[in-house]
Length: 311
Image (cartoon, rainbow, N blue to C red; front, side, top):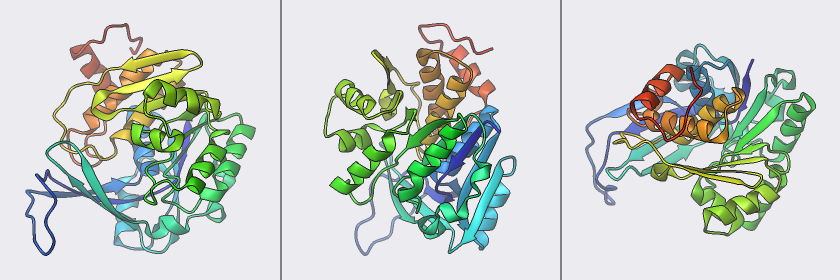
């Protein structure tokens, strides 16, 4: 096993592009809707597996139609999914301007706790924990990270957005966890909420002081900004016309870990992660998560300004 991913697992129902939200007491017709697996931990595990890493997913689903769909869709991943209440569901609305809005029913994710985890299954070189606020492991996350470190695993972490709007207690809980994180993957809004800062350099300085060794700051259509020690890198995105950006951040995380596991430098790793994330937006949900070969082919067609030892 290369990676163990722990966190939320659900189904995503993703709309084709909307020009605007429907008004109250009205109906909006879309061209299409697609149902795929979802949840940040599941997205990460699937993206890592598509890139060629051996992935294990630990989470909780319901004993229902959606749960069966998830198990069938994630064949090829070592899924260790406890059974609980209804499977979580996210309804994802995508818009012409490449933004998205979500409505989520956490379902079994909300009751997912350390009691549902055989900690002996936390194996590999990396532990990834996702969606701090949408699963029931919040108070036990630090313990899971300590278990991983005892086994000489590196820990990566993505809080996800906080639907409760980042109360002071939420921020303190995140800061308490960051002491045990090796690679932290916030997006810009999340990082601003945690640090109360605006500029990406200052944000990363603050986050590094909280404990992580590497910050992979996701900037969406503006690429990413990576900080490690005194090193700071702004890495431009691959320009695409996105169909659905849902899960692109999770693909970025998985691709970054892939590059890190190969011993690549920060530039190479960041560019690889940017391109993988961009490719993932070209179709709804998880349907266009790329392989390593697809990312390399795209990089060779759109060569960066530095060498990539990928072959």
